[in-house]
Length: 229
Image (cartoon, rainbow, N blue to C red):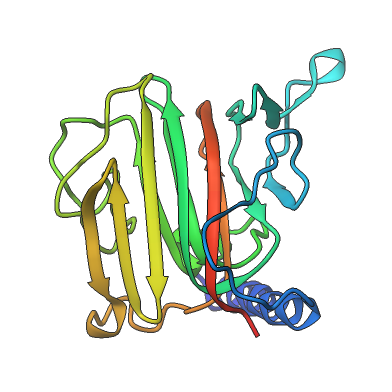
């Protein structure tokens, strides 16, 4: 990467981080939650922001990537982007169910910045992407389901086969990140003790990923235990 491209990318990421802080400062709802609460109302995408690729097709065939049907969030796939919950948080527990089609790839971003259509603002660069894909039964590595994508491999790959619902639970408390998939603990890490990730942000947004593949989400719940200030 040339020095000019590097500086431009750094400026974009800095701008995204400033947006997170500014959005947090504007947020009047700084209360914490006593329990998990639904952040998807089952009817529409109120409270969520589609980023990156937001439509697919053209002309009369043009349609949104992110829709709601039968009380579920449907990602039609195509292109690349995210559906971001528009309330930043520091410490929290996020719980959701996700179902994938064969060979599908998705993920959940945590403590991330708004996506600006550049690589540095993807969760896997700016913060973390919890990888979720159709890879049941495959060995655990830094790119499999349950990984902190490209940084930390899970202790096991706990995904169910395509077509089945998977429950993902993510708890972030300070530098500690605990992830369970289908009730099995796959991550229990302290980022402050891992050089490659110790500088990752401790506050930001959560988001669902469109990595070009259809995916369905339901029962998306969040408990914020430390609000962004």
